[in-house]
Amino acid sequence: MLGTIAATATVTAAALAAPVAGLFAHRAVRRSANARLMRIGTPNGIDEQGFVRIGGIDQWISVRGEDRANPVLLEIHGGPGAANSPYGARTRAWEEHFTLVRWDMRGAGLTFARGGPAGQGGEPSFERLYADALEVVHHVRERLGVDRVVLLPSSFGTVFGLRLARSHPELFSAYVGTDQNVLEAGRDTSAYDATLERLRAAGKKKAVAQVEAMGSDPRRWTPAQRTAYDKLCAGSDPLTLDTVKKVILGSMWLSPLYSPGRIAAYFKGQGFSEPVTAGTHGFDDWAEGTRFEVPFFVFQGALDVITPAARAKAYFDAVEAPVKAFALIEDASHFAALRRPDRFLELLLTHVRPVVTAGRRTADAA
Image 1: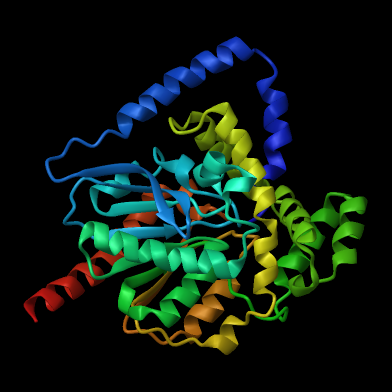
Image 2: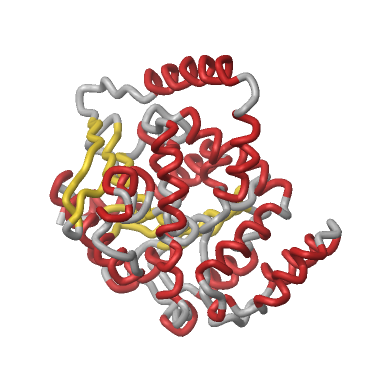
């Protein structure tokens, strides 16, 4: 969610100020190791990372996998502005079984770092990013010669993902949501109530007053208020905060793709992307439909405080789909797929890959 990653940036900056020389030496060693880990040398492998013209601007897309015959997994990252490009080393094992496509949206990650605010084609909006997403899907299908891809949205990306899967089932072999958002017109206040409870228990009177002043209906929040809430929600939960520090910021610091300048641009991109959330205020996933024409999977952190598992499970239970499965990722809050990439891959191999490959064999036979 927007602001969750930036919530600990100042803490990390303070830590970095200590023994700078030793820290950067350690970073250089770890980045080199990660660069070696990321090499793909298989005969039928693919490793293409660069910029593609999408929606009139250059946007960063990575296509990687050890066998082009594997199913294609297209991520839609969260935030808005929380690109997944730093996490290649954590999810390296996924590329043995899938061709993994990562896309840094307009206003996010390496796309934002390349062009800055002036190079994003104007202020980002939900509608513009949705159109970009469709263009990326078509680009990937054409580039890899496939009819359908597995759609893997996370966090705020699932707001795009549900609408893509509902409206364009012909493009996707499966939907796999994680950190699954369910927008329901402000009816479910469980995450908001739990955030207030944690803040009260910690004696954070100022933060309690701030959250109470916002009210429980996120449709009434400004983008800046949403960012502030996300920081307080994540920062008040020890597991989520630990994940942000060790997994999210740690991966960014050690990524071969990220220089200190690109790290700074990452956070600037999150701020630039704040207005996107305003375009979702009228959304209601229950009202817009629970029937999907593609296999439907949700793999959720069991302890997620930002997008609670109970809310995702309630929506999942109402979904009608050709095949569906729900699983909890133990010992994980938000960012569950990144905290437990081994467990997430196990779920992909157990539930998703057999369905997708079976469907592909059926289509080939026809």
